[in-house]
Length: 202
Image (tube, rainbow, N blue to C red; front, side):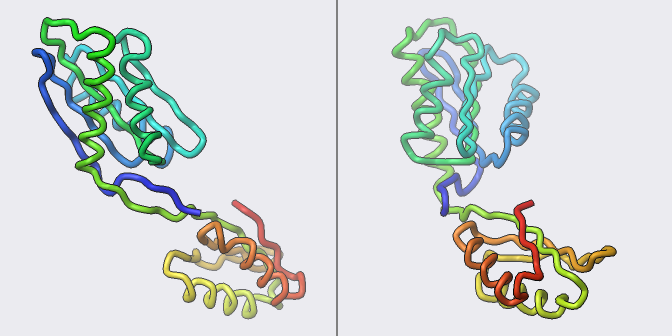
């Protein structure tokens, strides 16, 4: 499987009825990365009236209106991300109030529009969903496993393996593959070692 995300970090700024809106978008592969963009925006714009945000990471979705009327900022921002079928994306919109109220509809259009324009600038790229496996095998099967794993890695440009490690039981090796290769790779390793290798998700 694969998902769409932003190709690069981007920002868009505009002034609407005297209020300044600055939208920031970035790839975020975990909630900590999303929180980092929000912290950066707050640090760079400590005097802003609002720091509204939204993110989608896999099945997780979060948003905040940060003091704006409920449903006028964070949710519309998230809806833009969802409508474009983007994943692993976070967005922050910083607002400096300009003295004129926009009303609920105006706020929705301002926040969603700012994010949409920032996403236009960010572009889109496809990312394969990756899975990391731990391969364990006794010493007698080390050569067989390493040869088989190297063939897997060579056959797909996105596959990679870690450095072999050894303990009292034998080989321990991490193998990262696109998720659509996992079932086949597990079956082929099991067959090649006649069940002697164990393959488990990390």
